[in-house]
Image (cartoon, rainbow, N blue to C red):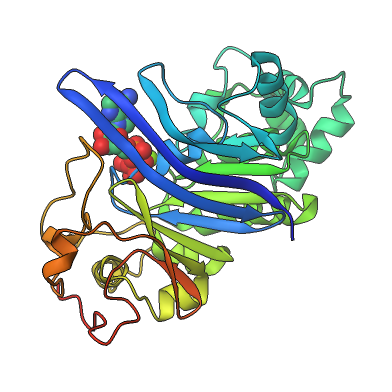
Amino acid sequence: MSHIVTCENLVVTYRASNGPVRALDGVDLTISEGETLAIVGESGSGKSTLGMAMGRLLPAEAEREDGRMDVAGQPVFDIAANDLRELRRDLLGFVFQNPMVALDPTMRIGRQMQRAMGRRAGSEEIHALLERAELDDPARVAKSFPHQLSGGMAQRVVIAMASARTPRLLIADEPTASLDASIRDKVMGTLCRLRAESGASLVILSHDVHMIARHADRVAVMYGGRIVEQGPTGRVLDAPVHPYTRALLKAAAGHEKPGDWLTPIPGTPPLLSARCAACSFEPRCTVSEENCHTTRPEPREVEGREVLCLLAGTQTEPKEAAR
Ligand code: ATP
Ligand code: MG
C-alpha cells in the first residue's frame, strides 16, 4: 500500500523566551492511503506540532532541525512556496478544535463554502455538500453567518469545507473537543463518513481514547515528542506494551463519557529542552531498569506493533505500570 505521509526522524524545536522546546524529538511515522490514524498523548506531548508539520503550518518560532516529512511524495520542509501552497490547497484538509477559528465571522456560510470549493460552485452544489455533512437545512445554513450556528453545526460546515476539494489527507486536531459531549460522536461519525466516501487518509489528534477506539485503524501514542507505541488500534488498546500506553489507558478507564480524562498519570511530563539521551518516560515508569536511565530506546517491532521501550519483548518485559 502506498503512503500518503512518510516522516523520518523529524525534529522540531520552538524558540521560546526561556530556551528551546524540542517538541518533536525524532518522529518516525508512515500513514497509508485511505487509513485513519489517531495520535494520542498527554497535553504537550507534541500531537499538534506533528499534525501541523504535515502541512508545514508551524509558527515562525518553530524550526525543523532534522529529519523529513513527505506528504504525497513531496518533502514539505524542502519544497518551494508555490508547491507548498498547492499541496495545502489541493491535497490537505484541516479541522481544528474551534470551528469559529476556521470560519470568517463576516461572511455568510454559502460564500465561504464557495471559496473553499475553489471555483464558481452553484448553490445546489454547495447545498449538496452541506447535506453530505449532515446539516439538515442546507439552504438556511448557507444563508447564515457563523454566529447563527451551533458549535456542532459550525464544525459540520468546517468538515464540509475541509472535504470540498476531495483532499487526500484530512488532519483533525481535537475535532470534537469544543462540542457538547452529546454530539461529539455524531460529528466524528460525519467526518469519518466523508473521509470514507473520498478515500482520503485521516489523522485524528486527540486526548479521547474512547473515541479513537471506535474510529481509528491505527493508533500512535506520543510522549515527550516521540511516538512510543504505534500499531493497529485493537492491538494497542487491548494489549498495550509500552508502560506509558498502559498508564494512559488506566487513567482513561472509568471515564466512559467521551472527552473525560480526569485521572492524571503520576509525575510530570518531561522538559523538552534537548535530545533525550535516555527513555523520556523513565522518571515516571514503575517498571524501569538501570539501562532505561542511560540508553535512548529506538523503535522495535514487538507483538505486531512498534514500541520504544528497552524492556518490551525481553525477559524482563514491563508487566504492570501502576498508577
Ligand atoms: P495539547 O494536547 O495541549 O494540544 P499537544 O500534544 O498538541 O498538546 P503541542 O502543542 O504540539 O502538544 O506542544 C508540544 C510542546 O511544544 C509543548 O511543550 C508546548 O508547550 C510546546 N510549544 C507548542 N507551541 C509552542 C510555541 N509556539 N512556542 C514555544 N513552545 C511551544
Ligand atoms: Mg494540541
